Length: 457
Image (cartoon, rainbow, N blue to C red; front, top):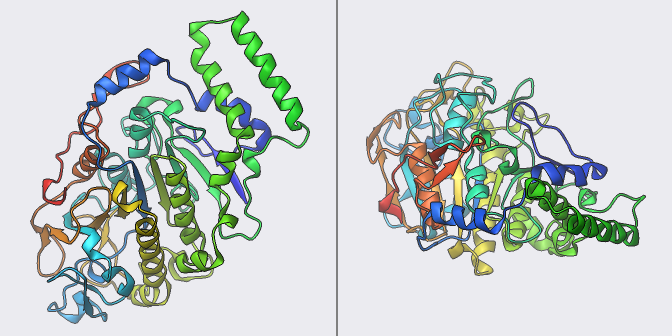
């Protein structure tokens, strides 16, 4: 099942097929040639090392101790029950629950000293997605509103790199990120840039046997010939009533027609074109199949795809990474095996297709977990130091940048803030990190105030 949503700033609504033409008109906006040239001038002319980005989002907060920064010499109440294993990178040992990922670290750069100093999902997540600290810090169930309405990385990419084909340049799947009560995190939309730059939010379950792209098909009551006649009528009206003021609306309407009539756009979502063996390699979970779908979307020309980990009913901690209880059981029984399988499959699949060198994959969470276990055998929120990893897209594989103290509690070297991650991604895409953006009121502001992490690029 699949539905598409272009979310307003304060809620996430699904779009039904018969709403597509209207949605295209208001959400897919077009650019005139002068606007496009102006944006290219603002963005700079750096040489891109990556054509696309996949954000492998482990929302909820994976533990640094179990993944990229294990502490085997720490006391048991810190290190936990899991050991370490060698990786393909000399001197780099990773958590024992990452056997497949360990074989690929020659393509991966690890950041061990990422810091938000924010211990709330919503506000630390906002900082990770936008590069801007939330006001105030550690604000749970924060809502998307000023002053916390900086655009997400996906929106920035969509602004700087307008779509060249039928699909938008930034897509989020398989659902938005939300706290209990369906409170969507801030920082998932275009914010200051205006709604036409929102990443496309695609609510879907690619693991469902009935998964289809019905939302990209014309409504049943509008056959192909009738749709073609409507396009012709629209073209005649455009010629008769050309008006620069309505150009974005008209471009959006044309885009919507292209989408519902384009076999190429529908083909990008057709997972039945993949072999059962490859689908099994990723794993048959909703998240894993979304990773495979992300690979198909970057092949189809989408510049940025963000995959959000989704909750799994009837599992501890709702099947997510927010492991306040039974952390070790959750990590061993399903979290780490599912992650290791999907992540390694994605990197290997991209490499086999010659796409990894031009696709930057970001292993991503909003924070880490506490050094000490709580009374329920869980680890709590920890934004004071945690780990991320980047692969492909011109990143220098086999590197480790930054270090934490002996308990993985605080950084000791190579501190990285989210704004630096945003700057690095933009740099790899060929944009200057401080490329000028303009908000809905035409006021300029920089895409990022961070520094490129030169040690890994």
